[in-house]
Length: 264
Image (cartoon, rainbow, N blue to C red):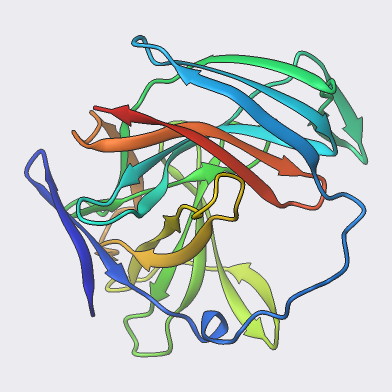
């Protein structure tokens, strides 16, 4: 398996390797229709202070969620790995739709958020891997990590998702069965010898300022389930170059990004 990069941190070897699923090998169908919930907004005046306070202005309509996000720069190319950290920005007021709490944004939003960079790792009790988690929901402290599950019995690898609580302990594991262009989750219990390799996004910035970021998927180190559950641990950040910024999600689930450089 091709290795993109190898990092060493606090005595741990952390790798990023190539990955291509069967679904990603199939070209996506382009759509010419504009969805009704598509974003009509812009991110302006983004800055970060010496104290890691990120400020930005967001204006427009069809804003669902806003996140802070940190990406790790590849040491030898103009690509970035992540999300090293992604967190919801809470709105001043929320609204409940179909029993789900959602932010209620104004059309002019002034943001000021203090970032606390760190490195999250997945541990099997012996080895570690990058754990680039994402929040499980707007109104919960849980977070989740997707990856490639490889059973010890030799059956085919498949995508899986681990949900963790705020202390980094495993709450739930599901695996996904591919059915055509759809996938259905089912509960999974790890068995001794099973492996799990976390997914990592490889993001390539657009050539033009307002262009589209290209995203691909890679893998971190495969970890082996033994006699204890996988858990997430938080360590000091990896000394490197990063991007820190704002990620805005529209009502159709599409993301718009804007970053500034951050060096640690």
